[in-house]
Length: 636
Image (cartoon, rainbow, N blue to C red; front, side, top):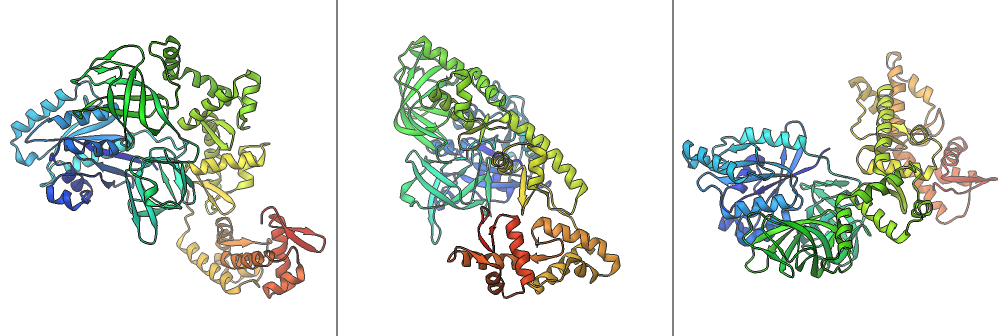
């Protein structure tokens, strides 16, 4: 499913929060002071549900000049912009500043909403519309729709909702191949749970149990629980507003402006090389050596701007620059940032990071300027990606890539890190690389195989892992093949069901009669416990007209993990099998070996059923037969 964040922007008291409430039914003002003063101070969040089942997150950002810092903290994760202008006031200073910030952050699409149309006559509203079109000329909102609405009367809200739905449908998919990263915009504690952070997941996906690194401090923690829009989820994806409950850290260990990321995936630095842009409507010239405030994600840093090819950057110009910070920052190549003048605070420009860990440069060094031009064009990246792609899905190591080309291993390693961070190269196994283009080709083949399997076996939960591995990645090392399949699952393209894989959106659909048969089968096997009748006997207990369906439902239950098939005739209910495994685990924790007689007595059953379980364990390498005893197997 696509995950998109819509961000409001505009001058204070222009009706952004009421507009969000009219669209979603959610009041994003959560602080008492906000309610009292009638303005948004902190970031507010809501979700917009569409009639086709898709959902978008909405970030309601503050408009008041004093709270521009909070606005910038929320703007970093925005995909689509909703610029809000009040009909009774028109374009105002913060409207202009917000529009400039959205442009600097690389937002490509959105629309304009004129609010409070119930407070102005139609002729005035038309004049405001023309004024809006003039102000957005030359920006990403030029030529975009302008909607006139009233949050009080509901005028124009259905049409606006439909337009937002169409924008969400057109929005580009997030890159799920990059390691997860979330700039923290809020930290708090919950009794009984501990430390919780919130933010917009801007890259990758994160799951319960994952390890996370808090930067720039470097403290590590475990993801204990995830919530998206107040609902517990197993995995959160880029483009979602996420609350993460962290185990192993205290609230004092982290704060707003920090970044949570997969350990080792983001570096910290006191310098950044960048393409710097001075806004065309800026009232300031940026001089080399100027002190500015740098806004990146939810972080704010004081830094000095060193222009590398000139002494001054005029409004509307851009150049290469090195930003030298007073505190470390966790950034990546390709990140967008905004700078504000030191005093008085006003937005003057921004840009994109070209190198997140540069050496200190001398101004006017032609070699440095040429190297930055290559980085900006990405031509060197393309060559390295092609080199990785030539190895197909064998997952070459750094050494294997470097040796034939006689490349410097340290520089190659750094380049591969950057390509992995950008999602152009994947790392399904530590230190083993796969080109994104090759991965896409594997996915196309995988999708075709699973679509065909689902058509032919609509009641099976999915294709067996071993079968998919053999058909999709024939003659590939099993560990490599399993890592590639796991990478497809992490991206949400396929899902694991028991010992099978299925397309992520596939579900078994039973008829009413088949559903009734399913419940009767599960009841029969649950009640029988270990000493179950043979499969033919179970099927014969059903009326002849239902026996064909019964066999199909048994296959569906086995494929989905509801039943465990020990032999072609003996199945166990999954709960019964889990109890057997618990007893086996407890026994093997205290003993080196297990005999058939001991296992029979442990389960309190006959030799027939004990042997069937042991032979199933042997087949799946849970235990290993050694003469007359069993020992731990590799799959235990």
